[in-house]
Amino acid sequence: MFAIITLIIELLLLALITSLGTMDVGNTLASVFILLFSVTLIPSVQGSKNMGKYSTQILLGYILRLTILFFDIFGQSIYVLPQADSDARMFYRTSRELVLYGRTDGRGYFISLMYTVLRYIGVNRLYGQFLLMLLSILALIIYLKTIDGLCWNQMAKDKSAWIMCLLPNFALLSSMFLRESLVMLLITISGCCMVKWMKNAGRFPLIMAFFTSIIACLFHSGSIGITIGCIFCMLIFDRHNQRIHVTPGSFVISVFFAGATTFLFLQYGKTLMAKFLKIDSLEDIANVSSLGGSNYSRYVGNSSNPLNMIIYTIPRIVYFLFSPFPWQWRGLSDIIAFFFSGLFYLITIINSITYLRRCDQHHRSIVIGLISIVFFCTFIFSWGTSNTGTATRHRDKMVLLYGLLYCLTLHSNKTNPSENKGGSIKNKYIKV
Image (cartoon, rainbow, N blue to C red; front, side, top):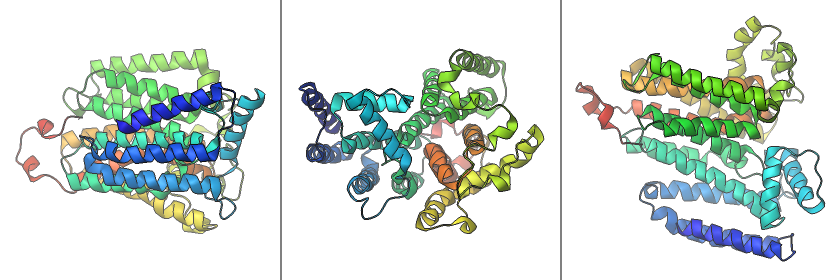
C-alpha cells in the first residue's frame, strides 16, 4: 500500500512540474523518485497478507529488473544488452518527438499511450521505462496470486515463483522501453481470469478475460491468439462438472464471444488486427519477418497451401518456442536465450505431457483448458515470426501462462496422498 501511495504522489509531483512548463525531467530527479519507491516497496511486499510468502522472490526480481534498466540507460557505452535494439530506441524517440514537436507519423497505440504518459510526467526515458518495468512486476504478482490458488504444494509454488521472477530473458524484455511488458500483462490477466473461471468463480472473470485479450490486440495483433484460445476453452470446458465436455451452455457462451469477436473484427479490423489485413495469401504468412541471419523460415516456412500449413505447424512451433538451437548460436545472447528461455518452454511442455498421462480427471481438465489457450496463442505468434530474435520476444509475452502450466505440472509430480483416497478433490484446492 505504501508503494502505491508513493507512486501516486510521484506521478502527481511530476505532473505538477510539467504543468509549470518544464517538459524535460532530469535523470537525477527520476533516480530519486525510483529510489523512494523502491524503499517503500520492501515493507509493502513483506507486509502483504497474500504476497508476503513470496516477498524474497518478488524483491529480487524487482532488483534484477531495476539493475538491467539502469544499465540499459547508462551502460550502453560498455555493453549493449540483448533486446536493447532499435525498436526500444524507436518507441522512445517517436514518443518524445510527439510530445516535444507534435509529430504525428508512425503513431501506433503503444506510442500514443507513452506519448500521453510522457506528456503528463515529463520527457524522461528512465522514469518512463521504469513505469513499463512495473507492469511486469504487477503481472508477476497476478501470476503468484493465481498459482497460490491452483495447488496445495508450497514447494512447487515457491520453485515456480523463483523461476518466473528471475528468468533472465523475461527480466531483460520487461526492463526495456518496449510494448512487451504491457502486452504480457494483458495476456497474463486474460489467462489468469480464465483459470479463475474454470475454478467456478462466476462470469465476471470470463468477461475480463475476453476484454483484456481484445485490449491486447490494440498493442499487438498477434494477441488475437489468446482471444481464440479463450473462446475454444469456453467451448470444451464444462465448468460445473469440471471436465472436458461440450455442453449446450458452453456452446452458447463460446458462440456469443465468437460472434462478438467477429463483430469487432468487421467493425474495427484496421484498429485491432491491422497486421493480418496486410496478408493477401497464405504464402505471405511465412514471409512475415523473414529477414536477417537468424531467419529459420527456410526450414519450416512453407505456407503455400492449407495442407503445408498443417504439416509445418508443429516444426514452426518448435522453432518458435525453443530456438535458438545450438546450430543457430551466434553469440552469448543466443546461448542465454536457449538455456534461460527456450529450455524453460521445453521442460514445461514435457512436464505437461507427463501430467496428462498420470493425473486425475479434475486436474486433467484444468490443464487441457490451459493448453488450449496457450496453443492458439503460440500458433498465431509462431506463424507471424520467422527469426530467433523476434521469437524470443514474442514467446515471452506468454511466459506467465506457461508458468501456470509449469506450476501445475510440477505439482502433479508431488501429488498429495490425500487425493488418492477417492472422492471429489474439488474442495481440496485453495479458492482463487
